[in-house]
Length: 469
Ligand code: GBH
Image 1: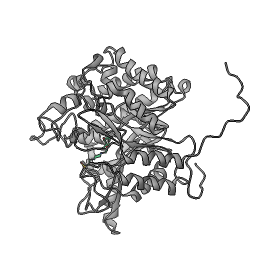
Image 2: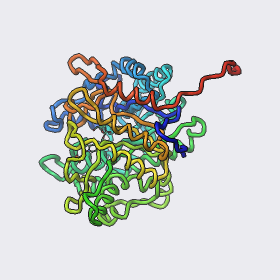
Image 3: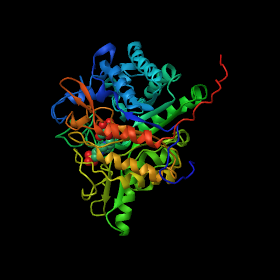
Image 4: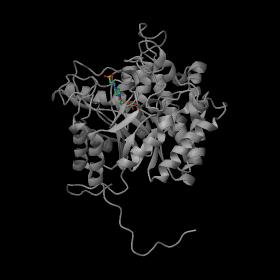
């Protein structure tokens, strides 16, 4: 654990900070160089799914403009960059026996090399929601256990081809969103839901839990493979990143305190409890009965302990009450929305104290070093004040909680999933007509904050280091 020190607390010199993105949100060029289709290509083209009716064909054009993005990162002086690999660029059809696409490998290989040449550490997400469409068509994607082997083979290719240079791996981004938004509410690809006005097929009473179960198993078996065949040699770390926002009871009544805990169990514990502690939360077992799949004892031994760190994505805080009980598919049910400044999207208000409380809760409960892999705020224009306040909390807790990374979401305004290009999370403004990038004040603020709060690396001695061969 990091020793406590009095403010202004300095984060250690090897603290990783930077910006995050995801392949489908920025790359565009969906037909280029042999890329296969993903479920998001298909979903975004269906009428009524995306707020502004637009899709990911161009996005921020980063498949072509990646060097400009690198220039931005360099100008910001970041330590690290979190990006994701599109599975369907690596294996266009996705499956364990399907061919590998060298052009796709080359794209990410070049990106990784170029980052390292610039002294920026690549922090790689293996799956940020863009499942190869073929796997959905073949067997239902995350709904079928077949996916475990296909996912593990895909990650194996990535470890083999990039693991010599990539030392930080995230298996999955936000399993809750994959499960609930994709297979319960149907607002994200593949858009499954019991609501027939929204989806031709789906069963929201069972599918989210099945999909989530297979996400956990896929994650766990990929980690097992990495640990057995790559980790010793390549010396990297691997883990998962979970979304989860802090929950505050509406008042001190026992029912409301319990409601807030249940909200955390559904949003976070669903995945974190099996992965870090080895079981599903009691509350979920009780609520779901036999709708919640179970692990065999062999599977459980693979799942338990399958993350080297806690990957934390967080954005907001919700007030919870018994009379607005956390819905199993909502996780967190905001009671009223007056906790902080309202963002451009309905679900987000800033509440920096919640960020801090969540850090402490996760550290106490799971005892793993925390990598904040996403935190951000959406505004129409230039101001990103709330982020400043969240960061201020690092100061207060840096000495108590073992935090090792912070990635602001996002490097650029980009394709904000069902919100299309309407909602802007970028610390860099993107003019979608010209694809020109304009740093916002918030980007400057974040960079300055970390420059002020991260210890400088020790100056090298006057004596030259011994020559190495
Ligand atoms: C992240 O998800 C994603 O990883 C990233 O790709 C995305 O661009 C970014 O956030 C900004 O949205 O429908 O009211 O019940 C954040 C987690 C969880 C936030 C679900 C929105 C919907 C709440 N998301 N939540 S609601």
